[in-house]
Image 1 (tube, rainbow, N blue to C red):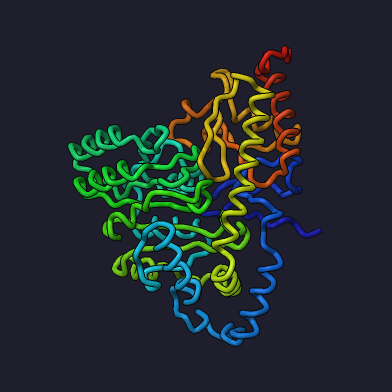
Image 2 (cartoon, rainbow, N blue to C red):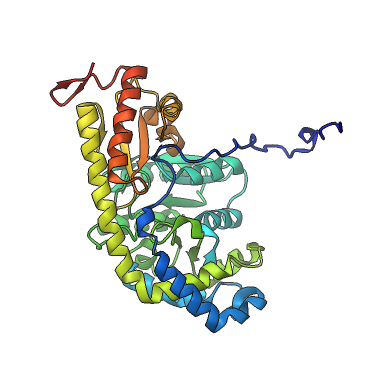
Length: 409
């Protein structure tokens, strides 16, 4: 028998541990950014794919689909109109770069702006993928606490002043102002204006992530930071993952050309998936405006199912809000609960969850907190999953002892 080749001595420094082999989703899946399967518009996507391939399929013979390296022009045309109506962003299609999901957008902006030892300011609770990327880059990450409206600007200004006294200018302020991940908060227009004023005063760029902003129950939201700043000093990213389907892997960056041209120089991948872009453009121009409100209505109902199930199973032992949009609920359990340990025990019982420390710069604060994604499971599955989670919490941490007026011990 041939001896196994030893790969270990060849691995680059900092290589992460090997991935665990995937064995399927757990029965009660509350992690990731999965969405509602019944609202993936399969028939409309099939029709869009058929129409656009019959009309323009021959352009697949060239990189860029005869649209150039920024991405498929009809999709950028749609986005320019959609962003104007939805977020108030007045940009041309040539100020939009199509990416392979918003994650690639994050990586490209980081590649442009960050080096080891640089400083960035981010929301204390934030997208775990953004935190992971910053740690890998060796960046000094400073978390700013949140309230019901997002970033606390008093602490942001305090941190900026402290850094200024040390001669440090952060490379950017990363914020998810519209349906914040994981809290679901929406920053009001007045606070947005104040945030822009502070950023300008300290000469700091704002990196605005709006991946969840289409999913606002009321359909109404403040103008984006990019719109309010006229694009000056702000980079904006978004995605179709939450509004259409996460597996499509199509996102975008909006920036002034002097910034976008430099980002484009870093995107050496011969272009993001062409077929996804073509199908999305064909679908969106006909169906996007009707599709998103239907999806949002279903998601709002699932959120309420989750909140009711938590109240029934945990009583006052679980604290949570009522987000105005999105696909996540941020939950606080009693202080003695370690949600990293809880996640392991829950998974053994068939429930997957995201422990709070993965989504926060303050690990101790987040120790008893967790994030649940409610978009993918059906309502009855949500109820069953929360009942199983409550049983695990009771067994492992002694909570909840009571649910409403019913003794659960």
